[in-house]
Amino acid sequence: MCVSLDKWIPHPIVPFFLIIALVAPLNHCAADILNKEHCTVEFDSRDSEIAHVVGTTIDKSWDEVARAVGADPESPPVRVIIPASLEEFGKLAGGYDRGWVIGVAIHPHSLIVVKPPRLLAPSLTSLQQTVRHELVHVMLSRVSNVYNMPRWLNEGIAMRVSGEMALSAEWMLAGAVLRGVLIPLDELDEHFPDDHERAGLAYAESLSVVGYIAETYGEESLPDLIRALRIQSFAEALAASFGLDLQTFGERWIRTVRISPYVVTLVGSSFALWLMTALAILAFLRKRRLARQRELEWEREKTVSNGP
Image (cartoon, rainbow, N blue to C red; front, top):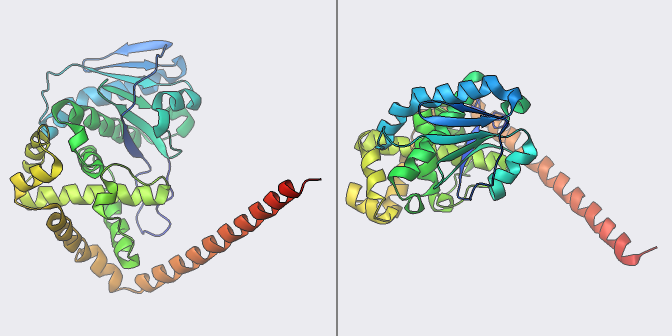
């Protein structure tokens, strides 16, 4: 997907946000199959070059991803499907086929499905990050009980390991703090917003919280927390690992965001005034457009109800 989240942040953002799906894969017949050490890639003949990039990325990332989440590097290969069309991707992705989603990791089938890159024209770096991100999701489902894992934790770990959004996420969070629109973590436990801009903020927050855990309690705390979630709820694992309840944990994370150097920079610059003014204008224009759309819908309903 390509998300226009850089309308109000001064740095470009990685244009791919991924999602983990909990649906069963449909039967799929591929024109070609590429067998690599740690994966099989099923693809249309037009996507041969991309299939090799995907397969090579998984093989090169395998040990690093396994180590980051505490998985066994000798675990079985994963299956990757690059559908021939967007329609086929939608069938495989089921209810998770949002317009801004370009990849899904489907467990417990260890399956990764990626939208045909030839229709999206991603950069090589973005494609590789996408594949790594989904590989992290698959690995997490193998070493932990993902139903005990908040969505933000799952996505945040995937983004941290795949190297997505690091700098742009900080600016996005700073802007959200100034606007007072941070999304409470408990609203991101199971689902992310459908709106692509709010979804982008949800991913930025997820990356930030996981970074806070690693920086505060050590990088090794993440695999420990992942393992604890095999048999414990997140609240239980959080208390056992860090001695915190959910509310205290959330408050401490938000405190670090509010005093981050990015927030301080925006507050202390003329950019903040420009930002707030621009956002107010955009909000007004959007509100007026939605009101006009409602008026048109009412007029159409009146026409239909009155009849010819």
